[in-house]
Amino acid sequence: MTPDRKDRPPEADLSAVRTVPIGGRASKVRAEAFAAPPAHDHSFGTFIGSLPDILVARDFRRVVDAVVAAHRAKKGVIVMLGGHVVKTGLSRLLIDLMERGVITHLAMNGSGAIHDYEVARFGSTSEDVAAGLRDGTFGMAEETGRGMNEAFTRGHAEALGMGESLALALGGEPHLAHPELSVVMAAQRLSVPVTVHAALGAEIIHQHPAADGAAIGDTSHRDFRRLAASIAQIDDGGVALNIGSAVIMPEVFLKALTVARNLGAGKPQNFVTCDMDMQRHYRPHVNVVQRPTQDSGKGYEITGHHELMVPLLAWAIVEQLTAK
Image (cartoon, rainbow, N blue to C red; front, side, top):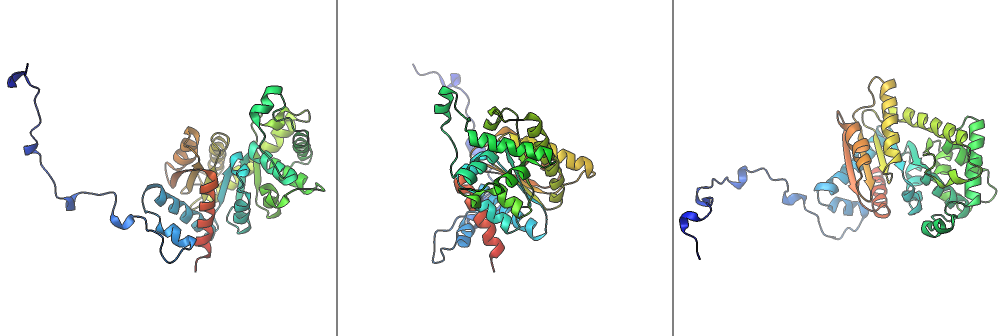
């Protein structure tokens, strides 16, 4: 049965709604910001310029601009890596940016160093974890564990950093499969500080009989102090990029930044940070993008697969540096 009109719920009277002219309304998107299709000029620079000036495409260009501006102003550009960046074949891009003098400090977690070591020495990396876990052979490669741990032991005795120890150990190997692909060796050759930030028990080489906790701790802690010293160089226009590390490097960066500011009367300030990963995580968002730039500077998040985003970033930086 149809209810009486007096029993029906009330309705808003749209005839009484107030409207405003669109010319007086603030709009977030304008037609001038839209993407452009391919035209006669198919150069990479034109492609970058054709991207929409909207959201992450805009942020991407701002990060590129910040890196280029930092390089030209001789400010620090710190690049922090996770292991996935190395094992997805991106080493040549990072080496090229170091050779151009863009990257002023290269920092990585332990897995990044392991993949770099194996690629340089043996030409392959990234084992089948599930298969090795069944019989207890996961992470038990003799040559990797012994070679890296012996490098740390020598480094500990000689007061070296972990990254420095690995670079020198690789340089002393008589037969390397691909030394040209090692970011650690390239950094050492180019006098770019290269630091490795270990997490005890989280890396396969800590399972090896040759593992020495004192050597691992000493060489990696020295690298922590070196990163803290380098962070001072991003003051007023520098850049810190975190690429592919969801936990270790964001945590290390926050503590090293605290040390730098403690020793530098509150500096560095006014720098750009960017987290680039396949998905967004709490620690990079808070420890890289948000907290370090809350009083000055700017933090960005660019999300996408490393094997696509890192080449885009590297090519865009070089394009802008070399544009006439």
